[in-house]
Image (cartoon, rainbow, N blue to C red; front, side, top):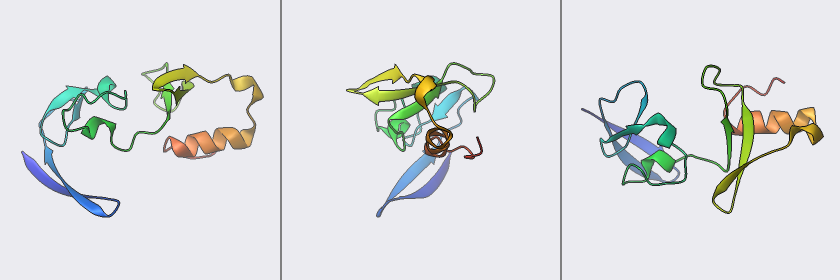
Length: 105
């Protein structure tokens, strides 16, 4: 087990590095949960670390290509697909940046 200090905003959080498998998320409290539980709007880790840094937008639909899939927006704690036929190139760049991808579209 490894202890890491993380700066989140104006406060520090201690994270216990768990020995999780490649298909699991390592919670800050040392627990392991399935990777798909991360950013699902449920406190699966019991310390809410699986929801830290999660936005109201996500990419779903493909597991083989991380940067490809369907964009979903969370409204009233429920993710809904966004229709892509009215998006500009600039809209796509903004979403890519929000998801942490290179904005080259």
